[in-house]
Length: 176
Image 1 (cartoon, rainbow, N blue to C red):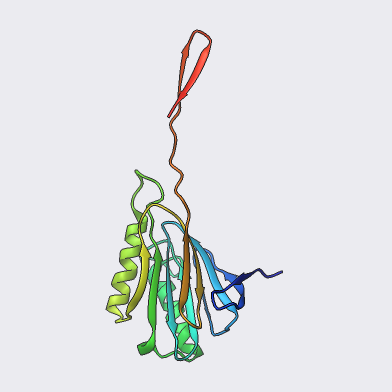
Image 2 (cartoon, rainbow, N blue to C red):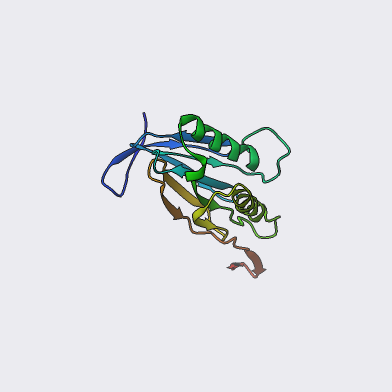
């Protein structure tokens, strides 16, 4: 059973969900690519004239492996996939999302992932027409590959609450 989502122009679109380490390209008008991002990044590329687009979801900026979990491999999969379908690289436009710092005190992997995307796109001379990067909350992304339209919903970060238990007499009090 496939899930559908209403799109702003009134069309019902089938969702194609991608997860970390996956890429997807399409020219279907009734399809929306969906993913959830934390520190990961998704670069959405589209050629509006050809009616083609695609997205990746990577979680490692380093290019040490051959998996689409790595930014460079994920980018090549989308670019090559679009060109195989008939996109012209000179018409590709980019939208970049994700790269959040999901937990304070950990290495800022999201910042590295976002920086990689921006540097890669600049080196390949692919214009960035929209981005929503960084911050402290996860994002749900819906991307319509044919038109390049994107919708992002941010989740509210839930702060960690440290509870202290204080015992005096027979009372227990919790403090934030």
